[in-house]
Length: 510
Ligand SMILES: [Zn+2]
Image (cartoon, rainbow, N blue to C red; front, top):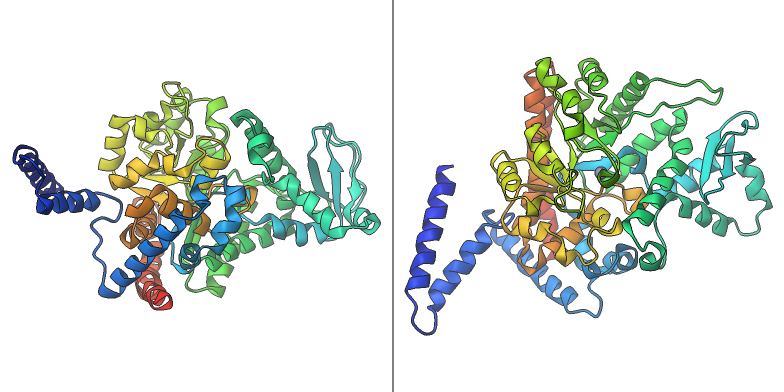
C-alpha cells in the first residue's frame, strides 16, 4: 500500500511538472520518464527481468513487430481462420513451452479435444448415435437397442453405421462438426449472438452421452489433465455441474460418485506426473443449489474449490435474483468461495450487466470473463483493491461474438492498468483448442499489443498460482486441507517450474 501511494505521488508530481514546465518542444528526458511510468502500471510492469530474460523479451518484441506487419494479423481475424496462422507463429511456439500456471476457467464438458472424443470414445463398443430433428446428435452406450426418447426416435449402432460408410474419415469429421462451433465461414454461419449460442448449447448436448458414460468419464478426466499438462499448465480448477454418470446396464451414479471419481483420477494423474500440482472442481449449476454445494464441499474439501452459476448470462437470471440463496453460506457461517461468471455481456445497463458489482458484493474470489468490467469504474476499483482477478478468455469472447478484432477487447484497458487477471480457455473443445497457449497468444499479442512483454507473461502465470494459493489458505481455515497447502507450496517452489523452465525457454529461443 505504501509503495502504491508513493508511486502515485511520484507519478502525479512528475506529470504536473511535465504539464506546467514545457514551452515548445517537450523535454525528451521527461517524455521517456512518463513512458516508463506508464509501462510500469501495466500487467507485469514491475517485474524485474534477468539479463537472459531481457534478451528473450527483445526477441519477442521483434517477433511481435513482424507478426503485426504481416498481411494477416491473427488476433484481428476470427479464431477459426486465425488458428492455422497462430500454429505457424514463433511466438506461439514459445508460449507452448512456457509454464502457464493454472487453468482457472474451463468447463468440464468442454475440457477434452473433440478429436479424442471422436477417434477414441465413439470407437468403443456399444456406442449408439441418434440424429435429432434440430440437426444435432445424441450418443448413448448401451448393451441393447436404446428405447426411443422425445428427442431421439431412431438409435443406430455406430459400428454398424461406420461399416456402411465409404468415407470413414469424412464420417468422423461430420461427427466432430456436431461437437464444436468450427466452420469455414463463421461470420455468415453465426450472424448473431443468439445463433452462435444456440449451436454452442447443442454441442454440449451432443457430447453429454459420451462424457457421462462412467468408464469414459474416468479416461476423459485423465485425458483432460494430460492435454493441459502437455501444454505446460500446472494446475486446474474446472467448473462442473457434476452431471450423473451412467453404466452400460443403465445404473445411474450420484454426484458423490462423480466427485470421488474425479478425486481418484486426479490422484492417479499427479502420481504419474509429479510436476503437476493437482485439480479441483468449482461446482457450477444453472440454479442456485448452494445448500447442496455446501454439503458436497464439507464431504470433499480437497476437491470442491467453490461455487458458480453458469449459463448464458444475457438470457438467464441475474445474481441479484438469487440473493437469498447466495447469502446462505454467510448465514450459516461457512466458507463457500464463489467464482461467478459476471459481465459476459455487451448489453450495458441491463440487470445482467449489474452482475459485475453483485458478484463483488457476494465476495466473489474471481470474476469469470468480466467483459463488462471496464465500464464499471467502481466495480473495477473494488476488484483491484481486493485482488479479485478477472478470468480472461479471449477466444471464447470472440467466437461467442462479444468482440471481433481482439485488439478492441476491453481487457486491453485492464492490462494497461495492471488489473489482476488470469488467462483461460473457457470451452476449449467447442472452440477447437487445447491447453492455454492459444488464449495466451491472443491475450499477449492481440490484447497486450507491442507493450505486452515477458514481464506481462510472467505476471499472468503467477497471478493464477497466487489465486489458487489464496483459496487454499481460505479453505484451510475451515477444513483440514493444510496438508494440501503444504504440498502445493513444496511442489511449487521445488519443481523447476516458473524459474527453471523459464530459463529453458530463454535458452531455447536464443
Ligand atoms: Zn465460462
